[in-house]
Length: 221
Length: 221
DNA sequence: TTAGAAACTTGACCGCCATCAAGAAAGCCG
DNA sequence: CGGCTTTCTTGATGGCGGTCAAGTTTCTAA
Image 1 (tube, chains in turn cyan, red, brown, orange):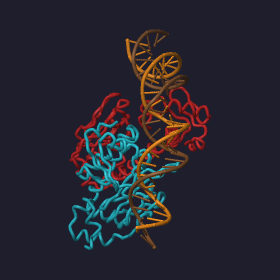
Image 2: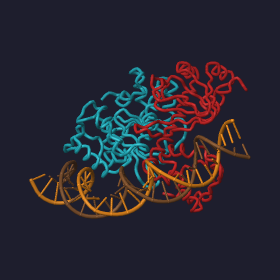
Image 3: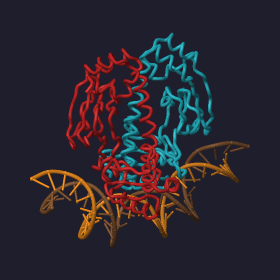
Image 4: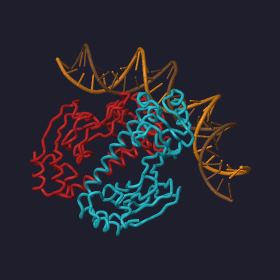
């Protein structure tokens, strides 16, 4: 395994040379989390940037009534914690490893120094922020204006598009998918059954979904 | 009116000296929009940073089914358009002046040069991004997990807290407030009537709301 | 001041979807 | 492979809140 295993995965360090990556690697700390373990919790102090070196992390919030909202599903190379790199803040969400997960972390002061030293990092972080903002804006709009059916249809289509295949395995349990789409596992089951009945999709064991008619699925409201 | 009327309002330029502000002021362009006019639309090219010098701008998206989602209410000193300062992108939302509004704009290249020249700007922009992200995350969570009643109660309490008074005028028409909270004007009317009946608030003509029992209001689920 | 428009309120109706419950299927581990 | 747990499906039920409609108040501008 290369000495800069973590940092070379991360888009925000894209523009740096190998020896600069080594510098960064020397200041990160490595952590391992088994599947199901909690990586951070709301109200934790937020003073490090987190990089997912391998594995999968679900980031969610808890509402006052105890219900869960899945915000992000972090994959290898994704980062989290950027929200408070410049001010003392508390976390507002929970992070949980869905599979055995390797995480690298950088302390706030170290990351601030890095940004001063390599201005391209700031620009890349701004880009990450921007994409996440746009994504969340759309998610909010859909959650409040479209039906569960439309949200699920959209999710299926976008997942297929991202994987560039019509047949894929759902990356989440129905329960987690439900908290992501703002609905319940029962509703997901029903809507998927409905789509299958309309011949828009085909379901197979192992959470495999095949999309038969993406165009028609998109028209779902 | 000072020569750097716009830029001195903006938190992201906070750390700059007066003569530096003059430099910035020299590259901004000024625009005026009457009440009700459209400032930008979805699918517009996004190549300028926008600063609200005075007035009020509502930023909203349209869902596939035509329904509106109010995302931000920009006030004096707020900025918009940061999402694409480094990449060619299109706007995904609409901006509409709610009252006569003065806007300053900075072209992307100019702003990129400013950020290189004054690194503190990048850091401030990151802060703005971070706050907006946190706010949106919470908004998403609430929209998908809490009832209309709870969302409205929360909105009233937060508005009162921001204004540091128990009696205030709703800054939005019920229709816009509805698109912000992801509901309808009718539901807002009903819920406000309910709160008044429970003696939690008092309504007066002119969209004046007085909060009588914030603690009890917070418990609304 | 006053007509007209826009915004707001109130009522009746009903559909979507969350909830509860129970049974079926799938995954896990010895 | 077999037993156990977790996840998923399917049914029945009820309530929240969206929609439509009509009346009322507030705002605006001549």
